[in-house]
Length: 160
Image 1 (cartoon, rainbow, N blue to C red):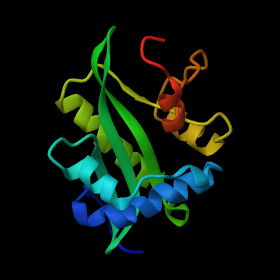
Image 2 (cartoon, rainbow, N blue to C red; image 1 turned 180 degrees about the horizontal axis):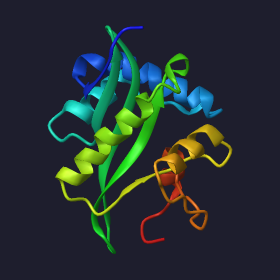
Image 3 (cartoon, rainbow, N blue to C red; image 1 turned 180 degrees about the vertical axis):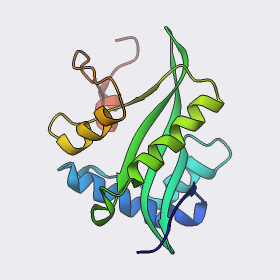
Image 4 (cartoon, rainbow, N blue to C red; image 1 turned 90 degrees about the horizontal axis):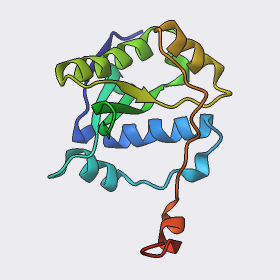
């Protein structure tokens, strides 16, 4: 096996990043939900006003994992970091790569003095739950996630 390295993502990684995002969506039984394009990922991550940060795990010239994160704000805590996706290609799992990606995001949180790191995990994703518990994470069953899709946003009237 090639040596694994973790580094900040580059614009040239976007094609492989999107492939990993699609792999995660397939695993999460939501492959048809991926709408984002390479161009959007490129602009959103590397344009004038980047919306996310990115670490990649690399084996040779292949990206085998990503950790995509962004800043969020809590009125109770202040600046926080949200880990949107942590993905490792299936054939590379259980080799510590997820931990390396996760701790890279933890280091960003520490450097920027964020008050907490947050993420979501599907209730049926037992390998991911075990991974986060092994890291000593708190998994909170009390909160219900809400969302409005793009089309639902268009239906909400101003002042509603």
